[in-house]
Each structure stands twice: as structure tokens, then as C-alpha cells.
Amino acid sequence: MKESIDSRKKTILERFEKESENISDSQSKDEMFEYKYLDDYQSLDQDYTFILRKSLFITLHSFMESELLRISKSLENQNHSQIKLTDIKHSGLKRYLFYIEKVINIDIKLSEMDRKTFIKYSDLRNYFVHNDGIEFQAKQHTKFKSLPYIKFREYRLPEIYEVESLEKEFNVVYLDLISKFFKQLFVSLDEYDIKL
Image (cartoon, rainbow, N blue to C red; front, side, top):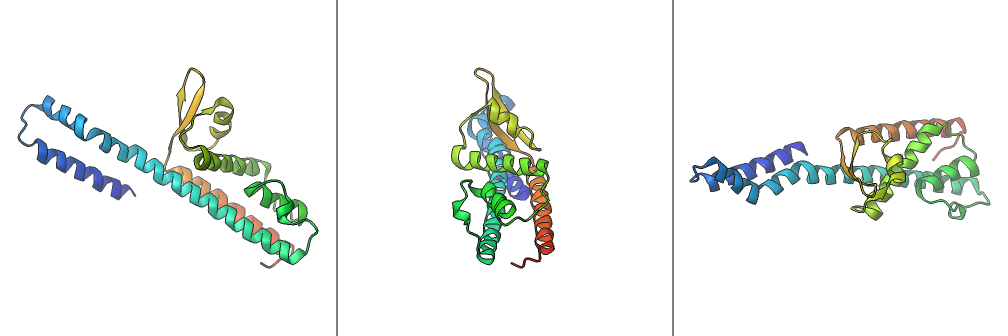
């Protein structure tokens, strides 16, 4: 990704240099760059990178939910429980965790801290998918700011926020958490002698 951004920036600079080669005044060159190229140049670092990181995050979260759905449906078919997955009022991650732990009675040894963190990531995913670009209030900001490697833009009056960027470590940390979760889940399934 970084190579692609650097290549595009280099192309912008080369185009500017070619177009401005007959301009001797440095101030005029600076004004030309600012007028014609600066927005595209800056957006490569900020917008493009943010979109890619956000897309990767949404993909990781979708993978986690789809795997949990697959596991939950497999457990539902094996256990012939009176309570079906569709009977659970929760949705997404909360539904699958509830089904596995409370209906099938498998202790997946998910710490309360990790559970809350997954719910925050799930809420952040929902924000990106359903409300992207819309500011949020202090209550959501308080929840999201505990997630690592996320930056916010704050508007003082009234106290409103929006996600400004995701740092490069954001998805690495999330992927590590997902990996740790699935390893523990499969250990727990083995302890209950459940084969998927």
C-alpha cells in the first residue's frame, strides 16, 4: 500500500515539475502547486490510507462474524437444541457468542475485557458501515477512544467527534485479538469434544 501511495505522489510531483519548469519565481510555483496539486497530494496520505485501513478493518470484522456464524450453525445442527440461532434477539457478534456460551453451554474462556473490546470493535464497524461521515456524541467517543491506534477530530461546540484516522497498527492489534480468540475457541471446542 505504501509503495502505491509513494508512486502516486511521485507522479503528482513529476507532473507538477514538468508543468512548472518554465516558472522561475518560487512563490508562483508554490501557489501553482497549492492550487492544482496540493489537495490530491495530501489526500493520498490521509484519505486513501484511511479508506484502505477502514476497509481492511471491516473485512476482518466480517470474517470474524461469518466464521462465528458458521460455527454456530454447525453447533446448532449437531446439538438439536430447542433454541435456534434465529431465536436469539441479539445480532452479529453478540448473537453468536450468546448462542455458543449460553445455549450450547461452551465456556470459551473469553475474558470480560476482551468481550467488551470485541463489542467496541463491533460498534465501530457498525459506525463505519451505517453512519460513516456522520459525527458522533461524547458517549460514543468515550467508548471508541479506548481502542488503540485510532485518532479523532473534535468539534468543540457542541461536543461532537468523528474518526479522523486509523494508524497502521490498528488492524494488526485487531487481527491479533481475533487470532487469540479463535485459538481459544477451538481449544474450548476440543475440550467439549466437538468437531466442526
